[in-house]
Image (cartoon, one colour):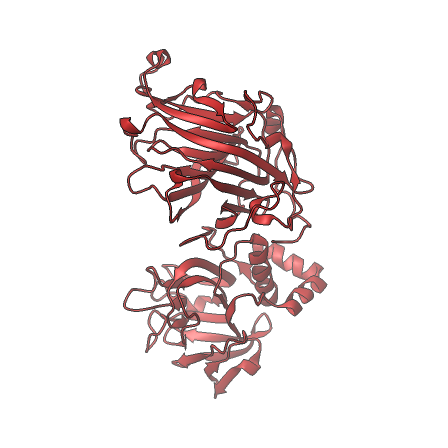
Length: 506
């Protein structure tokens, strides 16, 4: 279906494709650009290519190993390069230090080229004696069976990749070529940065797909930061998200999901401390553990036994807390300033929603701030539990390791949930992003603290009671996004993804 849709788009909107091709790919951070359609970049002896010159301006030319062959007009009417499985190109290290890498490649494998060894290399960066498919190296390869596949655009983004020789169609730096690719390669783009914005990533994918008549074959695992945040933006305007103090995203305040917690009692028009879930055993949720104190929402975990536990023996010894919005919403920017509890009890900020045909969840964070070995782990996830009426669990998660303990101080945590992507922020800096493939239905916003004996272990008695402090929750919307949604609407409506916003991509 993707291929059919692409072909229709190409036939109906040739002027759009021409504009996209004229603009070319983003040059920001582009360190290697090999384009077989530009035959002026190919040095050829007979029909064998000896050098493939870099168009990025960085001077990272690719030198042939073996005898890759020129295909003059065989790939959507453009030239491409054929690899026999014994050919490749070597490029000297394109980065001077360890850092992020995002690589795009257009390739195909015809039926006559199929078979042979599995995991044939498309792009490889290898430093030292470690295999290229192990950190800190980089490996974008074909599949285990080396089946035929149509013209495709593949992309991979990883952080903390070591500087080392680059291989195109073979393991980086290998002579003769190892684990060589048997198929055709048309274009290669390698950047020394991650693509936090889904819109910017799609621009490159769409450029390549349109140019080569290819479909996008994408690994949607997303990107997760490795290492410290670096410079963090100052909070000059509390009326805007910390990551977008210039409001390039066109955000407007969404008061229905915002609260400064400065009152003496919870706003019962927005919040309810207990709904239906009683907690993760052995910790039982108790409304008395949700309080306001000195301008903060406070969720407390205690070592105690309460009468309600007699009704369900799964719950014993611990009580904890949960707070949920009464209404639902979908899409928005949600930001809190918070300090997780200093125990192995969880401190969590998440969204959840369900209906007869779907059930989804986004975990902005689940932190065990005094769980042994996990004190600095920022755990993020997005789950699908039911899709199109069928139960089955699928998730996409990531963990950022902070250079400090979360329980030591307040920090600002955010989620940008748009029709195109999910972006997670800490102190205004992105720590994870992934395309929004499933999370388009309304959800409630939830704060809670749970006992997680299988993950964080049970909290030590001397660490209880412990408290999860939330200074505020601030929310924003972009034009055209729904506001607060009543529970009856959630089940009654069909929720299709909204179109991309017209505001500039950040």
